[in-house]
Length: 160
Image (cartoon, rainbow, N blue to C red; front, side, top):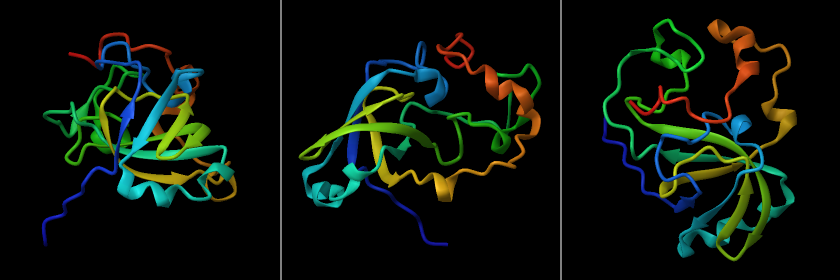
């Protein structure tokens, strides 16, 4: 198989300087504002994005180092298969967050509800479309009702 190489299209700027203290998921980051700076050569691709209230940010988890195929997720005390979690340390450390789009000026997006570390390389932006993306009968596996108890801040278990 040919090698796959991605180049960042921008940088995410947030108040979070390290994994410790960074919210675990966007729902734990309510009200946190940030900016997403798209490199100038991609700015034209932002046309019409301001018509969406929410967007997906896909990014490279640049501080992730080694990964394990079995991890203890932050909402559990039992080891789980990596691919049944959202742990950032993965074979391809790609992150995904749904954020509210507050505004857009030139090549800079203002967003809210961000759970990303400052300086994170942006790989892509996609519009969030509830009619396409929401699944009301979705099952949540081992998470069950635990997903309703997302913590606002990292309890230290992520930053070991």
